[in-house]
Image (cartoon, rainbow, N blue to C red; front, side, top):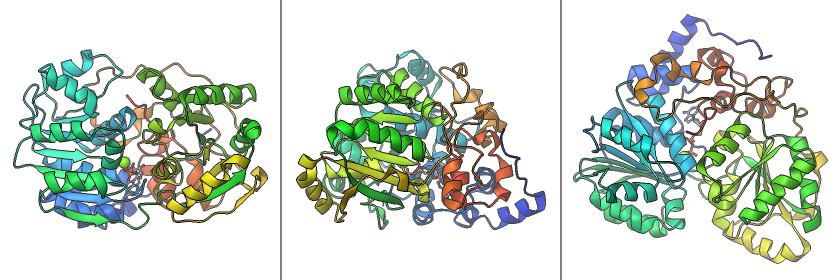
Length: 484
Ligand code: ADP
Ligand code: MG
């Protein structure tokens, strides 16, 4: 089912490792090697700019587009520098706006750390049991959403006074979501002196306030294109009347493959998912009213290719970090132009191509013009043309699999060395979902086709294939495992 695994000769690998760009910028050889095995061989611009000062202990703030590699930019120095924690006294804190993002960062950090280091996620919507147990055993790195962390502090389960390394990820989004006050209180509770790393799609407004007040002489890295995250994607504005939107969505999904559909309201998202199902499109909904486990299940189904479309509200937009998304549909327009950018950033990640389609009803044209003005781009509103979109192979739902049992509270101690390099963790990987195979395609399709869930064969073998640049290798890494 899976294509044969390309294997690089050992010699070639050693040679590559010697030239490993991560080592050249100060990342320890062992870690550079394990990144190499995951197909991560050359640092991205933000990593080149921020890793050396961050590894030295300096404050860093970075502005860069979605998919530019911010997680490694802070994750590597974090795992290199963090100390060992006493019970209930974490040593490093990562704040993230959404549960999904917190879960994803946690997983990425665990892959970077050694087996002694403990990384745990703290967010609401799940019971306290596992989180409290982990805290009692000592959590070196707490990855948290501000709300749950504040609860845990108020209950006396977490003390931040030994945290001397803080990361604020997607700081602008935390501000947008109203967490600013909480974030400041949490920062006030951390140790001084400390190292603070901040990443955001914008560094102005509220984020600038945080930088000025909580960071000391930070190294700034600002990447062009950060305000138009979907840059590598193609943006289209299609004239589609309200009544035709579901049918048009179904056609687009059938044509392009894995799609994220954005709706304005939670009820709208549920309704659209249902209507898509009625048209034979496997769709799941994800929004704030769904429980954490429902959201995780939905994301996992999508990652594994068991769902073709995920229908989401804006709040969920930041949480969806899945590579291999072929298309983003703005089913309803985003109210805030910033959300247009965040939504669109779900595709075209890490340089892969993607399509971003906005539906524009007759009565919405004026709004759309306004939105485009604030995006500093102008697009014509054109007739819908699904047949003109890049085509994916027909959807074949993989056979249902039992839910993964997972490791529950999963103290990182339960990881073993081998699994961290990607291969073993995903068990069977994707059983021949539509995004694999059947696609001899050019670079664009190659980048797409790796989708997610394919890391079963993404170990060192991939590194020799050199097919579509790093995109496809990247896409097969890290995103496949379940959000915990
Ligand atoms: P961001 O947080 O900037 O949106 P991520 O950190 O989630 O982006 O990275 C996007 C994808 O790129 C991830 O799958 C990640 O593993 C991959 N990636 C990061 N850095 C590199 C690199 N230097 N080479 C190849 N892939 C990378
Ligand atoms: Mg990120």
